Length: 216
Image (cartoon, rainbow, N blue to C red):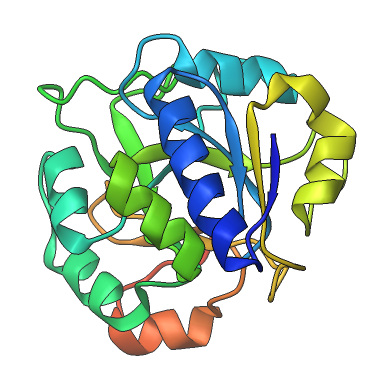
């Protein structure tokens, strides 16, 4: 099912269909503030595996989790260092992904994620509305592994086809630069991937931040 969410009626019908799909363990394509995402229930057994299979990706590359609030982040992480709070206050909602220790009491089914979880709060209003209705979702870029990231739902459909139950089209991605990733599981925060939030701005908030190539 494909919905043009620029039309009010289609937007509401699309959101309702996407919520049903997520609750059924199926896949949806949704807009974010970076590129379009391929999403699934972060907790439903087998849902994230469907996502990985659709992309042609192994379990050693688990998807990050999108949340709609700081409170949802607190439910997923074992601990929240001060640096996590500071970065989230400064850049969420937005294109910053935080890697934290996963709380083993929370039954995520993302793949072989080694006790950590990557979490982001997107800025796109349609994504946030969907997350408010579904709860945290496992979301990766909506493309086949090795192929260009989709900047519209139509582009995602060209690559993923019938593997996805619901496509939510909301126009071209406003800023098709991937999120910056910061690892907060070590003694000092470390940038893992450069992206939409530059190193300089991160350093203003967390001066102890390490560059990807820097030794602590």
